Image (cartoon, rainbow, N blue to C red; front, side, top):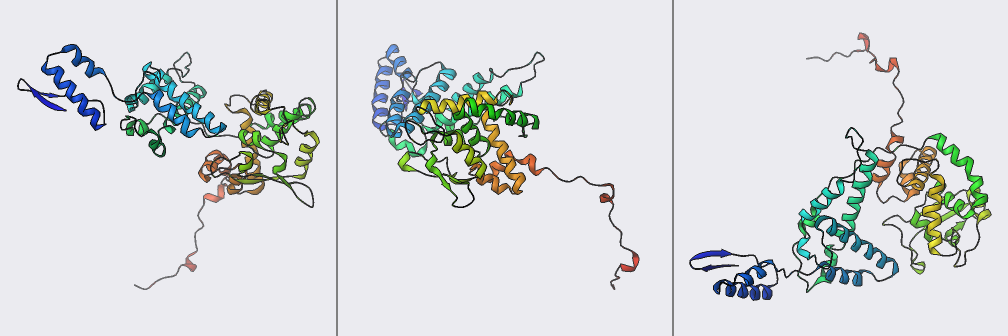
Length: 383
């Protein structure tokens, strides 16, 4: 708003995009200025009509959390926003208003989190620490921003929310990921040698091990997988496991990653040998309940193979990636690796398995010499 008082132009931001609210506040500001009510003028200047983030996130959880899985996702996203606001401004969602969602908030959050990156005595940055911290920064931002997707904004009609363009688009320094490399053969040999002991002492964890190392399955896929997902070959043994949309079981694959994973007869026989029926159904990784199954897949197996696989953030996942490299060595086709692992984009597969594509033959001494045609074979063209 702009108005004159005693011949002086006064320009004030009203802190709202709602027309009736702006008119009401403008009237209060003018009255306070004319009456020279300093206290009222200051209070009006400091007060914001933007909605609090807690009000907005309550609606988000209500609208997005239509089932148990989505409610968990919604709470995680709200938790990420809460962390960003607390770290960057020291506020809670109850007293932070939506006007705080700016590019500056993102920059402050990144600056605060970067301080957690470890350095050695000489001041050199620890690469693994930097990777973990920067990966977590991008993950928290992605979760928080997902609350304010443009497709969700209709849920917040009636709330005063500013333009979120800068909050959505402010970039951060991406993690500088080292180029992937295969696991050392000595590590693989040690894990293979120890697997029979795992099968005898913890058969349920052993099945998870087979799903990581022979079928290349993700953690979340293993937690939902059932034995009924396997279609057995009528002749010769083996079969296929369908990681496909199964609405009756509440399972939806990661975006564009539906696939049928081939199972060799020897692998299927090993699964059958150690499998038992769960109290809650025919889950492929047997357990008494969902929480125990998650513990077997996420924690127990990671702790077991972590004895040999060092300096990796996703220990069990390294076996999934190694399985992908074996598929490439057997087929020579990167597209088969994409299908086996369920990568939505071939670019992702290329990024993780570039080291395999680099296995080019060496040049011999004579390869560099360009053969010279004898003069007798040179064709002369008339001018």
